[in-house]
Image (cartoon, rainbow, N blue to C red):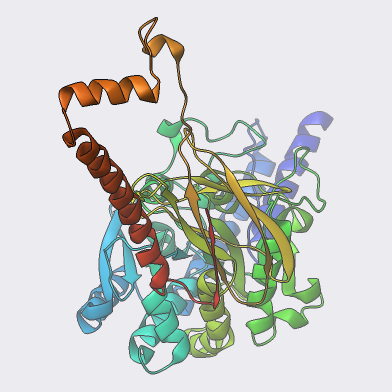
Length: 501
């Protein structure tokens, strides 16, 4: 009997903890997990437990009422869709909209693309913003509509807006989790945290494609179609720019750097220093943090982007309050506006950019680009063989271009504050095999000239040889012209250009 009372007291204590947790905010990237408890109890404790459940129910109702009140002034999912379509009609010359899939409840995941040539392939970098990953963090979806409208209103008027629209393909997904927003909770309609649903590098979780959420599948398919240079997700509950790695091999909390740690710190600092007060944080020095140093998470979207999609992603906590009053949104937008613009512009204003050609006829090559000393490789685009490699300014780098069937080439550059353009021309590997030629074949020039003379008697053989030489020279000029014509075009921002031949 004493053991039974101990169990019942434990049950009440556990339930009281669950009730009290409703009044404490969870951490921005994480969340609290709950356990189920089962057991037999006597009538006295059943009555006590029932009263506690009734109190919990009342508290939940009060909690939902509070969220409903806070949601006043925010766009509903239907309002958001109308706003996206209205934006596209108003700014059709520099935008298009498309859906990457649907949520569990069938809500389209609408994306706005902003560019001077929306929907067309160009040798330009692409950047994506994603908001509302967690349903109870809605500020991002509001700010992303503010960003789209600001770019539309200021194109050809403000230099930063013009730079972004003319040189970058910006893709904006205001809400990744419309179901969670509608339900006023963190997870999606299946109550799954979408920022824990991606394949993880350290642990065999989320490896089964059949168990992934439709929102996660939509993001992964999206990145198979579009090669994004960089991206950012907008969260709430803190004020800090978070960068990889998000997890550690042993689930312990400490600084765990990825190969491009310097570049990520540069990107995070760029956002923080452009913000109204993020860099003044007392909790996070400089307003930035390594994810694993803050607290490890697994199955996150940030690390997956970097590992599997070649995309440098930041997780931006843009508001201490997850769900501030709608009247505060204009202030939050003003605090983050310059940070968002500078982060997008950084993919064209810094780093190295270029294209890779073959020396035979100047055709583009989908080569791999690596940096000596950094264990990370990106691939040039398929259509134009363009690459965009983010790097920390003010350092010396050895850039290497490799392609199967071609000779690798490298060059050293000192990257300044502005972007540098480095184009490569790779030579095909030519191999000669003895068994291709018949045994005893005399391949000397004299013998071939004799046969030509026999076929073209007199001066005709000399004319034929001259024509061959002329044709070869013309082919050489044509392939060089293809490359040089590209180099004459001003494709990238920044005065520095080099060609590796």
